[in-house]
Length: 398
Image (cartoon, rainbow, N blue to C red; front, side, top):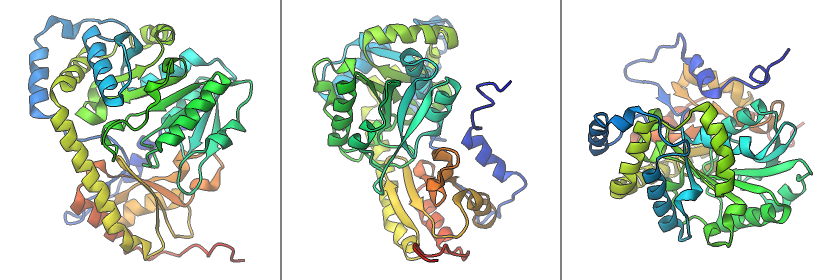
């Protein structure tokens, strides 16, 4: 018997870390780890102080409401309405143990075995993994060179088993920010067919444009179509405290409550308390973190011409990520461990973001640049530019 987990591919991040086994890096040339989009620094001191105070509060050590603490739901509803210019009520908010669990709860409430969900590719691998483990078919929607999905192309993939379309913007792995008109086109498509549009906005707070990235919450009865997912992990450096959120129809959240109660009962109290404190006190600090990420994004753009001269291409660039094409004869999956050994750089190959057997990602890498700085980015691009490996044959060559 093959179980659901055995039929699902291994998580890519631990797999990539195994490439480091037995490899040593000279003191003057340390590893540049651009594989994972998770902040390594702790929360800011003022938040840690608030968390230290919370540890003495009895509620911190108890179960809370399944859909999240009322005060956090109210704070996020206020924040969400202010940011998007729409109307959001606390009853349209659920708090989860991270954004991955938010996606899992959403899929559990929307689908049954044999159903389908449309995912643009390259896709976020954990979304694909959860669909596989749920017996739900991930229907790949290929994007063009700009990595922006097309709603008209998605419409051709809809069947009587389609239950949702799932988008990530700003995108993981591509980094690109989906234009408002693209998001509206997918919203209108989902509404036309009675589907749900799942919009994962984990990286919302690092969008290059100030203000709302779309106006979907201004649509009447938006919650009958739109499901937004959010993470406090990146904005407040709370990755280890597991705090995420779902913004959706209260009736659908009631169904998700069943999932939550059997998986985690409630999101961790410390993470919830920290998230609420951050929402009420750290707007300026979050804005400063955004400015720093945007500065690193500019550094990628500034230093990439040295790689472009060697045949590399910059396909996508945005919050936390760049998505690049290499010029070499070998596939990205073959090159990735070699990059660790010979260049001291850890990247995820594009093949980790495509269906098994699909060669579309063979020439691509995801660059998670949030945990380096401008000097590290300059070093990274210099190391890649120095590689002298066999090049792929020109397109169209016999």
